[in-house]
Image (cartoon, rainbow, N blue to C red; front, side, top):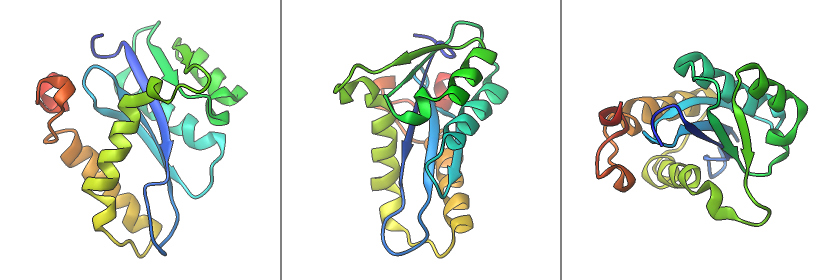
Length: 159
């Protein structure tokens, strides 16, 4: 699969501890492992997934037919998300019931985010968490983080 042919969206609660709770929705390009879109919110509503998808579409301008593979979460099955996919001419795909390995690339990103960054931080505010997660994702993960699936190259090296 080449750049812009397959995206993997996902949702996670990256923060731990007693600080502010935040949810992160992200969209990963399967070929480059780059996070091409993301959104953070306090609540788990469809908007968080739609915002991440819309950011990915604005930034990447995918060709019609790109495959967007999600888990079976309600945020991805809702009408708003389906309409956003349709408007961008993106082909939806959903994991099989009970098969958590279908979305392994996205789960790997969230695992890296938590173990390499979040679990070493304490955020006083959501804005502080947002700034740090943005800096790690856009600054470190995309440009420096090496991926075994990419032959130990960074996402930036694959573009």
